Length: 70
Image 1 (cartoon, helix red, strand yellow):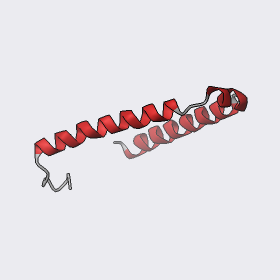
Image 2 (tube, helix red, strand yellow):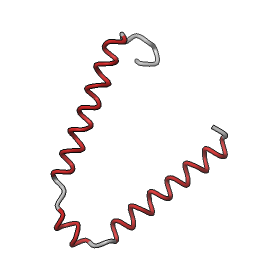
Image 3 (cartoon, rainbow, N blue to C red):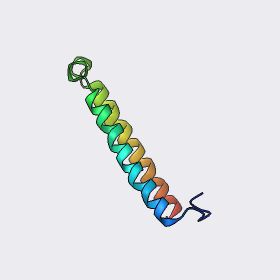
Image 4 (cartoon, rainbow, N blue to C red):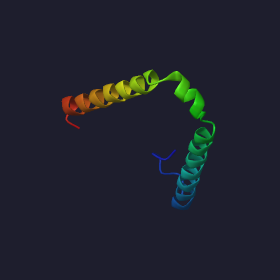
C-alpha cells in the first residue's frame, strides 16, 4: 500500500510512530521475561552460538553487497 502512495502522509506518520512504540513495548516485554539465573545455568555456549550466527550473517550480507555492487 505504501508503494502505491494511496496512504496520506499524516496517516503514514501516525503508523510509523505507533510502530516504534509497539516495537519498544515488545522489546521491553522480552527483557522483563529474561531469567538471568537460567542464562547463567546454560553457560556461554548460547552466547557463542549467537555471536557466530551474527558474524556469519554479517559476512554473508557484506559478501552479497560486494558481489552485487549495491
